[in-house]
Amino acid sequence: QKEVEQNSGPLSVPEGAIASLNCTYSDRVSQSFFWYRQYSGKSPELIMSIYSNGDKEDGRFTAQLNKASQYVSLLIRDSQPSDSATYLCAVNIDTGRRALTFGSGTRLQVQP
Amino acid sequence: DAGVIQSPRHEVTEMGQEVTLRCKPISGHNSLFWYRQTMMRGLELLIYFNNNVPIDDSGMPEDRFSAKMPNASFSTLKIQPSEPRDSAVYFCASSFVGGSNYGYTFGSGTRLTVV
Image 1 (cartoon, chains in turn brown, yellow):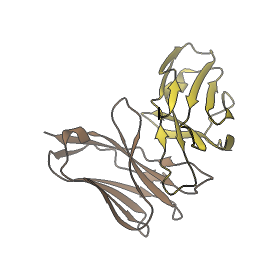
Image 2 (cartoon, rainbow over the protein chains, first blue to last red):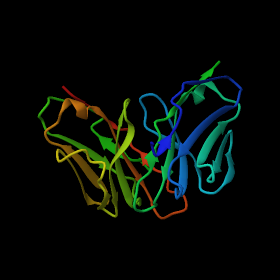
Image 3 (cartoon, rainbow over the protein chains, first blue to last red):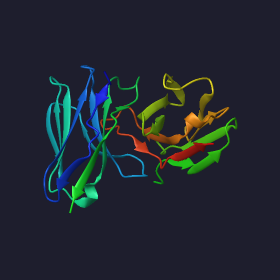
Image 4 (cartoon, helix red, strand yellow):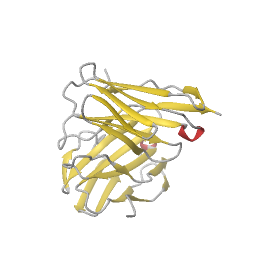
């Protein structure tokens, strides 16, 4: 089992809809969770971080964490064509001793 | 801040040649990471430095790969000899580990092609 799993997609949503991206992780002691956005040919860019159970909102983005279910998600409200990218989930299991482990990413396509 | 600076942006080399990738982290960051990204394997950690000391090099594929961080503002990743299967995008990232939010900042990457 991979440490961090994501559906590769593509996930296709119409402009203005809510896009829901999901990620599961295998290690129960994971401490920190991040979402990165990567446009084609570019480097990953941090868009959200979450450390405790519940929801965290930042503009059109909401990160949700459920440690009991080992599940983290990213909701994008009012999706725009410019949101079309690959979204990478990253998990830190042991801060200071191990680096972030990344999922393989979900490709999101927002249709105008 | 100029961000994480990597060079070169593109590198094409012949099998068997030595390749050196370079990285300048963000000033004030205490941790530096080298990742490799391919379509098949995604983003994989190669090595992690904290305060210039290698902490986790379990991702370094084999002895052909070596990394150094002689000071807080510079790191190199060397492949000798290079092989076609090393073709990938190599990212350097830096962070301040120990703060409340230590998301990584990535450089623009080096696209390596070994022919």
